[in-house]
Length: 131
Image 1 (tube, rainbow, N blue to C red):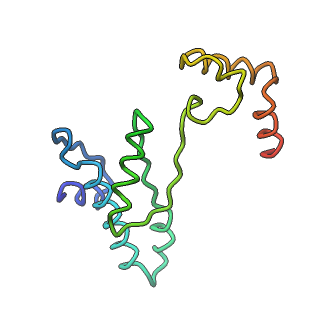
Image 2: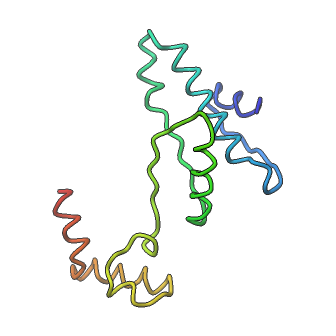
């Protein structure tokens, strides 16, 4: 974890390797949250606090089950970050016409077509509410 903290202190990227199942993700997240908390304490009464309030950690996984596992493991720690979980069209789409085919490529293509033709009422309502 020394390398993680060193990279964070220097504003650098770090490439760290460890075998599968060794707790890399949770260890790295906890190191980052600890670093952020320490910096917030150090700068609590200074102008620099503004900079540290905007720290974000973005975690990307290949599968939805992996992100669920990370969220579950993170809930066992002392850290309670604000989480936003984004998913693919196959996990989040509610358009029954698009979802009739279980093939991921077909779902993505169907979604694209529905949006381009402006025939997806769900997407149209979303666009209206976010103008």
